[in-house]
Length: 79
Image (cartoon, rainbow, N blue to C red; front, side, top):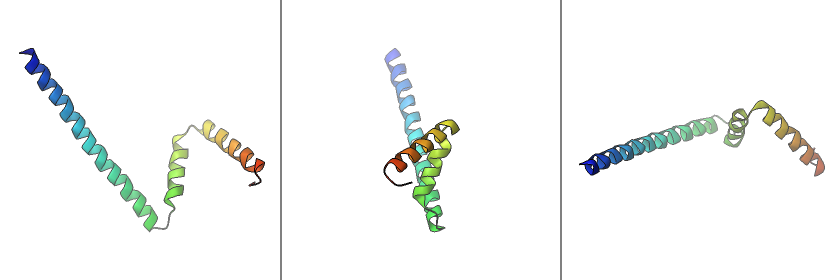
């Protein structure tokens, strides 16, 4: 009897994960649609992605990254 309960419980977990995977796929599509909309309005999707990445970082880390970028660019003559 406990094998049946365990099998049912496992099946429930699997079905929940499948449902979440479907939701994630829908969100990925929604995200792609927003990028397409931005591109159609003349925005650079590359820059949009960079802005998103920067906004996700801690401000202190972002400032450190920018300072390092400036040092490296200066070192190779791009500043």
